[in-house]
Image 1: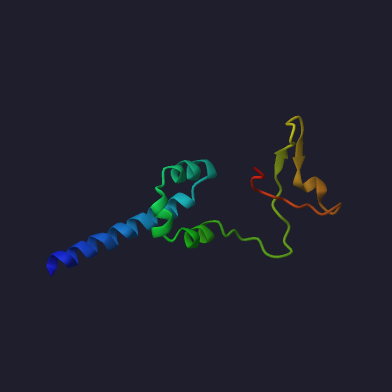
Image 2: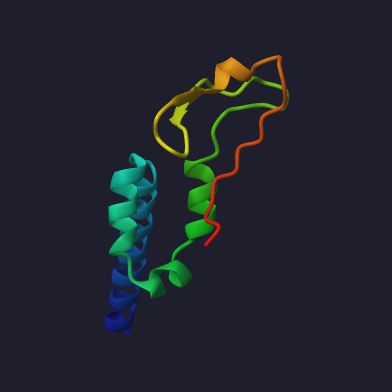
Length: 101
């Protein structure tokens, strides 16, 4: 009976360490986080509370109606830079992050 209890304790501790490690990884800059996630085995996404940790790590603190932080991005052809603040109070801006492939 003690062996089973020890095994359960070790598994609970291991799970806690893995969850803590994933939570720390999610708070890293995107490049670091991406390289960590590339090495994550697929079974980890089912066994660990990935979505809950993700929502906590990337929640942010913007409120409805609050202005978005200013940033600049290169245009599609790469010859110019576009800054979000240049569109303020002129026209609506929709940002779409994703892949169309």
